[in-house]
Image (tube, rainbow, N blue to C red; front, top):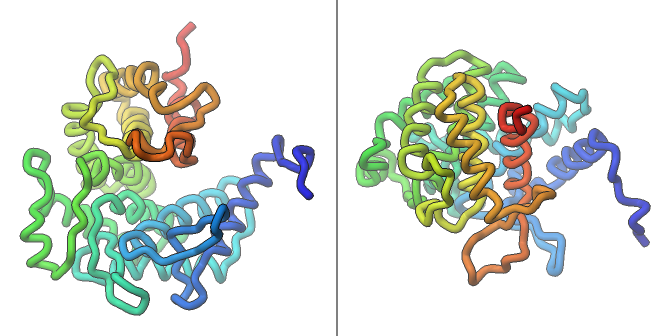
Length: 310
């Protein structure tokens, strides 16, 4: 029986080590080690494949975290698991569109494009370039940046018809800009910091311009346009903070601070816990650790200028 005295409340490195171990254990042995997307512990335990997010989404989450933990903390990774997760990341790029795609079913070919996953795709490629010096990842990342410039415009969004006809894919349209390419600003910043590849920064700035024009106003209000998916908001907020830190953009910093100080309290508490969804019909009490991590990254670890001035 576990008691509160058994809960780790002081050793952050050990908690990260345990998280790395968990990521390396939720790989589908019947699918060449592709990570499961839906992993539920309770009340009904299950691990399952998702036709939009298994290889297109999860490997980027895992590789970004695992390889960073190894680099900063010296955590020993399960190399066999890392290889499987890396193969899964590259599986998402086996289509003709150099952006993360997913299979309809295990054994199929990647055909489903969900712009929501671009962030995770760039996180996978960034981590492989920075920590494993992967030329394949570099080529895919830079081709993907070119593809976004080709098929996406700030004023009109995606050219869905041309995307589908050029690449024989099925597009799952995002709810809004934040839910789609806007989320990828931070991963593009990381890629630029690792490689100094200019178009990555150019794209990050183009996405930033749309985000601050349409979603992050000067007064920091939480507009209905943000939608109900809270991680789409917090991931873009932390992305803008990273870009502001990189470029020294004072106006951008002020936009981040305005939202952080005012509207972020609509979905968080003082501890940093955050709700998953603003949709009234969903369980309001369910939180999402993604959001808390974004809040932490925005507020203290990365952006000291958000702290109260003395």
